Image (cartoon, rainbow, N blue to C red):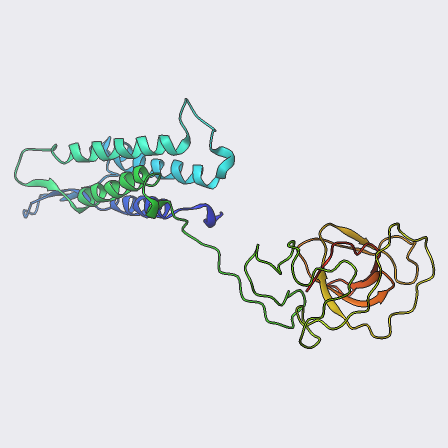
Length: 293
């Protein structure tokens, strides 16, 4: 059951259906009788003597609520699914109105003797059906009832120093964020120094300048790491493969994808040795267009 698919109006419909089910077991008719031979002084909707009160009021209202909720649980895939020209929730709205109409008219019926009267179950059933039919019909129209019943929790603010934290708390789409050519975006890793200490993106250090290459170099033995290199965080604009550290021509050992920050632990010419969240390290040969943290 996906509670995130339910709205506040659906919750009102479900609550009214539960109340209606409880009302069906409460006295529908009461008799003012004090003699020793009066017999049964009250009957609920399940009594066969009151047929068809049970199916035309209580069960019809519960069925209406069930159809509305089933349609909601099916999600957007069932938006155009119809039965005899109507969706399930539309059938549910029609059934709830019909049950309410019947319950209101039933309050005017019954024996004309002053010793008979409608019990608490009858009145509670009418109240439940008013809520059910009102919520069912108003949910598509009233914004307060269309609001989701369960909302997503706000994302917990990341703590600087944790793996994957970009270091700049700005909003998406602002300069300095992933995908926007602003500060920290230097394909050649040169000419830009961020202030701070090592430990999280945004606290970069001077990085050795490497000239971009026009063509991918032929596989060669891995060069020694730059002596003055210090680790920094980066993100890529497109998925790229990581080659083995000891054999750059070998099969990929992992992949870096957009939207995630990775730690560069070594620099080998124009290439980087990147570390994945699980600790795997590999050589990223294509460093064009990356964003530094």
